[in-house]
Amino acid sequence: MAFAPYWRATYEHDWGYNSASMGTSGMYVKSGLVPTYFSNSTDHLTQFQMTGEYYRDCTFGGLVSFVRTTGTADIFNGGTGSPTNQYETFELDYLPWFNVRFILQYNVYHIVNNNQNPLLSQ
Image (tube, rainbow, N blue to C red):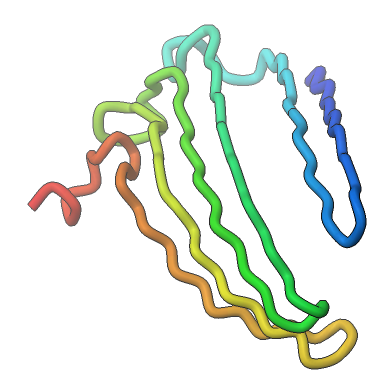
């Protein structure tokens, strides 16, 4: 049996046609199914994400997002076992009709699995 409480809290401020929000979310998982000789007895994973979005007339818009993930090294992550990742996302959006969105997205990866990917280290 696993125990996995989840939380999410956000503060949002609106002014005119603008809004800003800041929040946190997380989960704590306690599971006794994986023996410690396969994995660490305790692990943690932390992710920081900051995103800015702008839309003009609910038709054109985009976003810029920064994401960094860190945590406990574990053999299941491969390489050195580090889950460290860092990347940015750039996105342009076009919303011609209700419930229709065309997206052009570009991701820039700086760190992937603590740069243990053989394709990135060559």
